[in-house]
Length: 70
Length: 368
Image 1 (spheres, chains in turn orange, blue):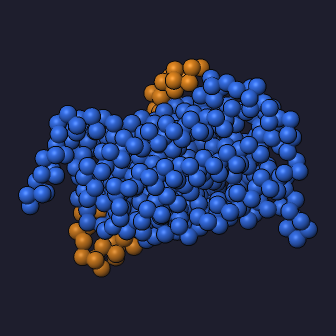
Image 2 (cartoon, one colour; image 1 turned 45 degrees about the vertical axis):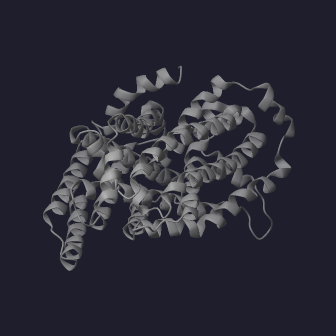
Image 3 (cartoon, one colour; image 1 turned 135 degrees about the horizontal axis):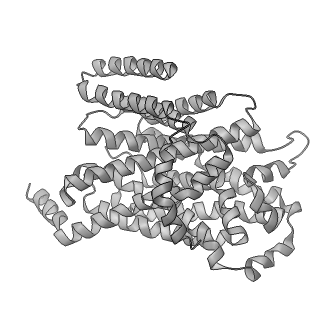
């Protein structure tokens, strides 16, 4: 989890440099970076007990079985 | 703005489809449909083209505008933004699944004892760099490697010619069953249906009105190459053994003895595969960054590429612990999830035709 945070900090610094160089507004970008960072950490933290694929399986598996005539 | 030629479009989508199916889905299709998989590929390609045609009709009505921007004028923004979110999630899943399979494949055969995070990170770095250079670079890369990849893929039947068991050929007629072919029709439709992504890149096309013809050519090339690969695999291994192979393509490559100086051909062909997969995944990353940047009215999509790729890398590391878990996911409705995303343009087209809003847009532009 610490490594993920470090990687995001590095990416953030590099992108801020790029944005400053090209004179872009930073607010929108930084909020998106924060969303991705939090999502990554949450996903990694809850990984063994909860997986995002579980939601897909619950919703779409019965539908697919119906379509594939299983 | 208009940076993609018709040739590049044809080559990119052909590469996109055949690299996905040959590298990852071939084993899965052969397991579900056996000897009837080639029929499934042909029918699936036709269904995928039908889906793409609907998307093309919608896109060609406003060839100079971005779908992300005008979609909310067709159906309200309360529906359009959740649809875009759904498309982003499906694209993320395509990237995550392909990255996981790439990692699994490389760690099983070539990078033994290498930790998965290292493999996925380096693959992610290559993908992010390609995507960051922009859509022109992605399509040019596809154009650059297309012919050499095509040549290498078309050579396969000549190398395995001696090992083919010709008596199996009659099985294609005697064992024909559309019901058995149906799962591969369904899965192939979801891959060919990925051509619907053209809707998001219409303003980048040099000649948007003739783009559907290019997509037909790319589908024909992709079908030809996939069948050229699939039929020798069936004829060499037989209908029973193919149902038990996870990576039949690799098994057949290892079957080839090409001479004393080159023990097996697989490393050379795997390198070409990797480039094709990287090009495909960088396009998917580009599409996600494009949707996010246009939705939040950001001027530049480039700074979003690295966070998106890194997020995909983390997700792919969390996706599955083993191949059994991964296959239960693939059989667990993920293809339906992709197909639903490919059906959204139909809803847009119907509502757009009823409301006739595209005519007003065109008239407005003509007056200006």
